[in-house]
Image (cartoon, rainbow, N blue to C red; front, side, top):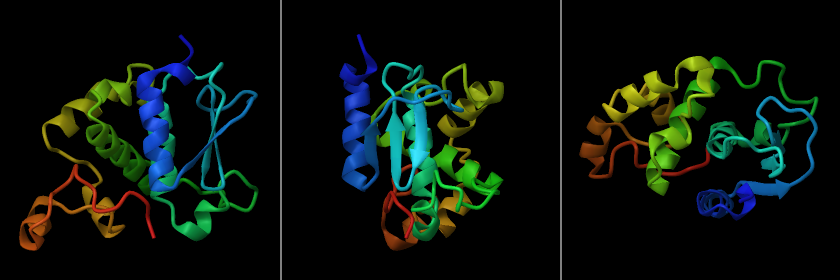
Length: 167
């Protein structure tokens, strides 16, 4: 079965379009993640080359945590050479955890054994035990609330998100 027809992939694509991230089907050459590339506020997907559909959520996380003025430069030579920063990477990883939680997918969907430089299990263990590495950064970006702030404001804490895309 092609990933394009996969129910999980359809659910991911629908969710991303719903929050404002465009998905463009496109033939791609060699890319950092097979079958995926980023453009200005969009993800290019080559379903024939896609190996790990959970990587779509990770790439979406990069767009989501990037400020709008930079988000429209993604994929061009105008984007900063430092993009994504280490902070952006941590925020995108945690964002993708919130997204898979929202979609009710298992952690292994994003944190598969072939990604994250062999640290997938480490991320799964930390996140599923409530150790959300990078949470202060996502809070600072005004995307979510930690337990203390959520309780004060009577809102749901992370992994619930207050909004999905950074302003």
